[in-house]
View 1: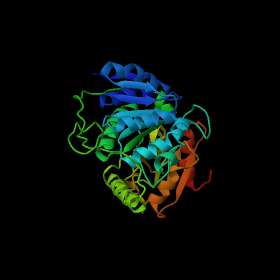
View 2 (view 1 turned 180 degrees about the vertical axis):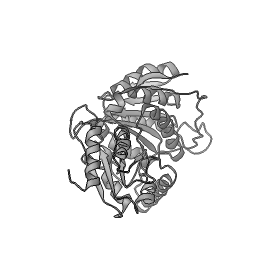
View 3 (view 1 turned 90 degrees about the vertical axis):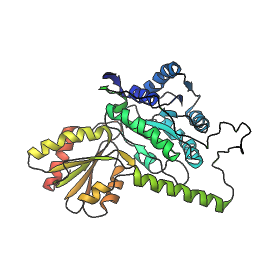
View 4 (view 1 turned 135 degrees about the horizontal axis):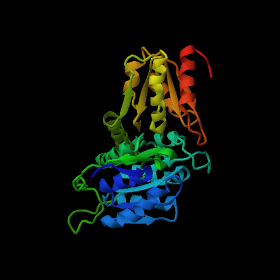
Length: 354
């Protein structure tokens, strides 16, 4: 199969189907409605089930039920709808059920608008719902990377029995680019001896629940979850660097903002300003290693975001006081331009506040 021109939302859907997803429960909300529409057409073609739920709350609980049987299942939404799913997401984590949850972020808070934003960063990386938990979060910056990360998201979900979030902004969902899906053999799912598919009289019934009324028992379950989160932090960090080896200043950006920022690097270097880029691909676990490797020689880091400055907190934690951390951001669906980012990094190099 060669390259095909597709819209980002549809790429997510097709990549999920090719990764073995056969069940989708969701509700349309811009700017990700094309994903829902694509699944409505595509899943019946491969013997899957598509169901448009009556609400986002219903959809995430349907995901819970399907995930309990061991199938690959997903849902998708955009910011307000994603907020409605938080209780169900916490239940998925507490019950240790694998699923893919897509959030194509729009401007907020509240109903906001349908323009692109990254203002759900806190929500996806700091838990989002109730309880002590984290969820792996992958943030692609191109449609080709969506193909790869969607498959990886399902693999991580199955490997650790956890929901995984794929997050992009509205621009990523709406843009069109040529992508290549490659040739994959029929996806074989790992054995799931915990799944509630019936015992057929062989062994005790399998029960999936997040309920534990005994405080000590719940604490032990939470300790087990924390050990799993620690394992994910050890094994599932993903990032990319560009020209950081000799950089005096390093910009930090993810998703489509990283693409815009990348174009600034060479322009600044042509002006004699040594700039590099760290692009987190996993927002959780956050990639601390590239900061630890550079923080003792870099003059300043600058976090570039489509938010009021949410990722900047994780950058500061990773830098741990070894260097200043600046910020440049646009909010409400405004996309930062190359010129604005360039002006920011030149001002930082000159010691000027803008």
